[in-house]
Length: 219
Image 1 (cartoon, rainbow, N blue to C red):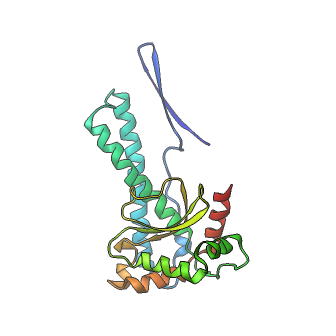
Image 2: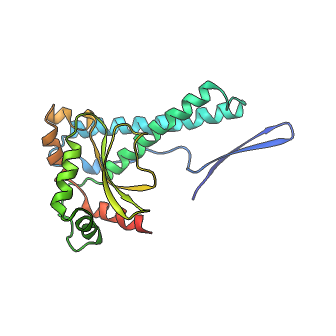
């Protein structure tokens, strides 16, 4: 794992701040999704811009927290509030990346012989039961995310509603399939017709990417 390390000397003492990431984060390019069926380029470009804002704000928060730490203000209200805010911006960045990366213009059905498909069948009795549960979760009133998680400890799959970027994620579970249910993900094209957006999303899932995440979660 790469580390970004900043050191500050105060008198004879060296203070090192170690963060488990490469600073700064860079926005990823998802223009390959332009032209996807059911999601207009206008909607996607707006969505990309919103995602880029999360990347920028995540970097700004890490920088601001580091400056407060260096100024011996780690116990200040400012530090505390920025630390709380970090989860929102960081997860907003990461969840959008997972969302975009499980979309494709070249839709293919999930391979029924894959270990992931068999896991769904084992956990939900059949694929269609899982699908109806996922759709029902996505149809709930409110805004947020619908995420299919793999519980690595108990070995089960869970469809979860996440109301905020930084709250409600089941601990220790790996996100496999991520769906954005905030209005910005669909209202330009569908207005209040979320059900139509759900069907569009389901017809654009990159099942290979999702299956790969499952395989990675097993290791």
